[in-house]
Amino acid sequence: MVELKGIEAPFPLYGEFLLADNRTFDHALLAGNGAVVAPLLLERLNLRVGDSIRIGTTDFEIRGVLAREPGSSSGFRLGPRVYIERAAVETAGLTGFGSRARRRVLLRAAPNRMEELLVNLRAELKGTTAASVRSYKESQDNLRDQFARAENYLSLTGWWCLCWAASASRM
Image 1 (cartoon, rainbow, N blue to C red):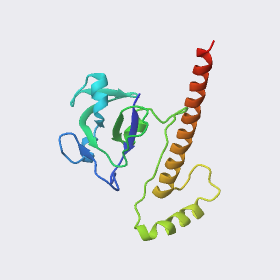
Image 2: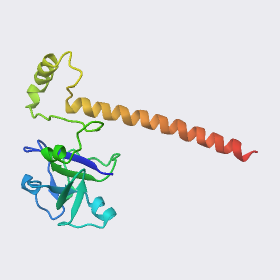
Image 3: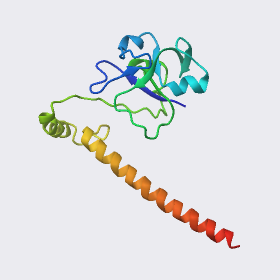
Image 4: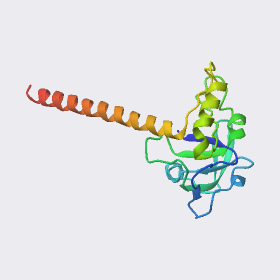
């Protein structure tokens, strides 16, 4: 399992996207079924740059290895990250019926115009259930809340497990 990202220029809007060989990411790497992958994928599948991987119904050539990616965190991931062209996600047959694909449109705005943009977009999309509007600040707040809930859950689960283990040991 991998965490697949289909991107198009001008991604990234913020931050640096660096490859393991100290090159800066270039969208030309993804053209014609190219892929840029996390080092963990190479390790797990015993692959190297130049090898091919099948994603959906399409073969992709590994053309680069991630060193640092924008928006990256050391948080939970479903699998090693793989970047391909956005259009290639569709042609690989990954967006049909039953797909779990999510689409995001990222916009860059001047910091002093962010609130105005949010208000305008929300007004235009009011009543639409197929789209939502979030700022990076709201996303950070949401992530912080999710971590807090997970910490509370794990703390309670750990306490319950310790209590159960203590009870079980008395039997």
